[in-house]
Length: 342
Ligand code: DAH
Image (cartoon, rainbow, N blue to C red):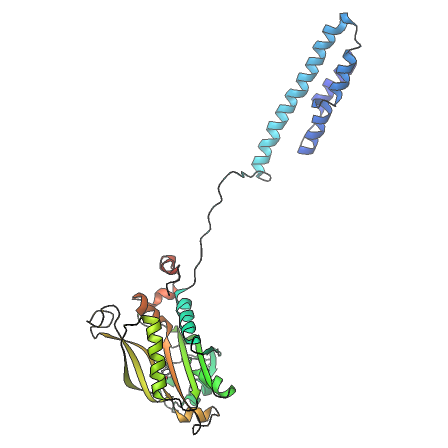
């Protein structure tokens, strides 16, 4: 038995443990109740009384050696685990919070406009941002030398005078009328491009919503009533509306729509430039030439159209003084629109 114990002490000292699996093997053999210790303690019972003291001491020495090495191994392997970070995770720590995103103010305004018109039967149609001259200008009754076609207003694609980035969403009315029979009630939101210097008031990329209604017996009274409805929904019941005669090649007669300034209530302030009114859109009765260009009989059908800038509506509603804020992605600006305000 003495030899057996000496051999085991030697074995313990020589056993190399480098990982968790080997540590467990070590534990089962030298520490566990079912390991070698158990067998030795059983044998102890058979040892004659006069030798018991000596054997007992050796056995204790063996036990201590085994346990001390076990403790050291646990500590060193634990340190290693932490060093690599592989298996170490403190599950008691609170989770780190993630930032909540929100819908861009331009998208919020677009969605609000669409939902107002959807209630009175308008659907949504879209067209390409890269357009040909026909859909952006010619079909809309722009004369060949109209200033809007000039290089300083329009971004042409690769110097091809026939292809350009659309300068307004009115191009979508042409596409809809070419492909659908009246009655047509459609709203076309989208991005438009103009070759303009970027400043607080204008940008070369912005958004518009175009509206179009074509049917038998559509009158200017229908247009006015539709605009009144929109203004009430968007800006509130007490907002006043006025129509100012204007000119667009694709509508006859044409008008611009002003609303009473909702900041000063018509008294005069910076937003309305002390006039008491702010302009929100252009509109008019679809010119018979446009209907003909799109394959719709102007003797049978009439229609109205309107167009507004989404940035402009949003700037008025939220008193935003610089259009560049919409595209700068400044989180301090965007955070103010986190909750849907419409
Ligand atoms: N297309 C015009 C623009 O970009 C806006 C517009 C005015 C649209 C009058 C219309 C309209 O449909 O009838 O300035």
